[in-house]
Image (cartoon, rainbow, N blue to C red):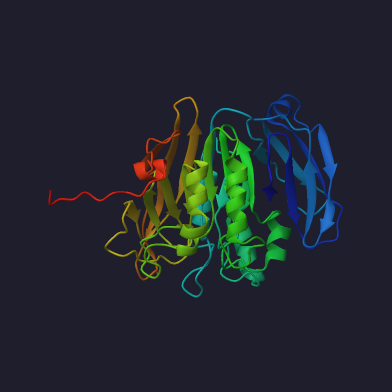
Length: 380
């Protein structure tokens, strides 16, 4: 798993239960094309169920080939790209890839989404926004998860945000590194990853401070990703998660956040509140959830009983964030079978968000003057 990529570094975690001495060989794709060989190598350190390799002094905005040697038969050439310092950044986000045995496994649903994402061109990383598996103690499902994402992980950085089903945080950190909160910079975007679950190592008040500090002096696209949606038309949590609305949303508003991604509710929904776009995209393979027929205020669009993902492009040249809502397949409401597969690149919508807010929430005149607001006397 390639994780924690920056402009000039990355971390690669090789998962194995073997006692071996792996080495990673790597090179830029251009140098590899010229010579057919790798001109760098690095050894790793053992960490529980994986070997951890730190690649340093890389070139920004550059694609690399790498290969793991000395730890089994799988020595195929894989790749990743470092993030550009400025300019355009494209990535994919999806969530809730867990299976629903005995109805289906990750191989039957999640793999369809992961393989389709793997064929996307020019994406710099992928974020799974939580609930990677149904039971974090189930080693067999973890095996199916990694088998389902093998093609995808062989081509890009894979970042995981913990969900409420990902309860074993020691294992989660061993598999994916940092469990959050933290942020990454890619081109003119800063993406802050938060932890909305009960197992978070920081409470929501502390994470609200992180929101403010992460974006206080940043000038670019400000994006937040967490597992639970602040706003949702979900039948069981109609309106959304009030604790997030109370603790985090004010920090989003004050910090100029433009876009918030979440999952947990197994559908797609776009909600706009106070100039911020909130997108729930939990179509990674988990059982579909119904949304209330009466959508909450600010709900713009929603798609149910589908598999899919969102492709995000932050383009400072156009001054926009573009989100393509990609549909991979339709699922029967009883979850037992797929009803239709869609051609690659099938988009239900393209959402365009200006990098600068067009919405301004003006304070009341009385608030500005420090005076009580006088009610108009309609009898006069």
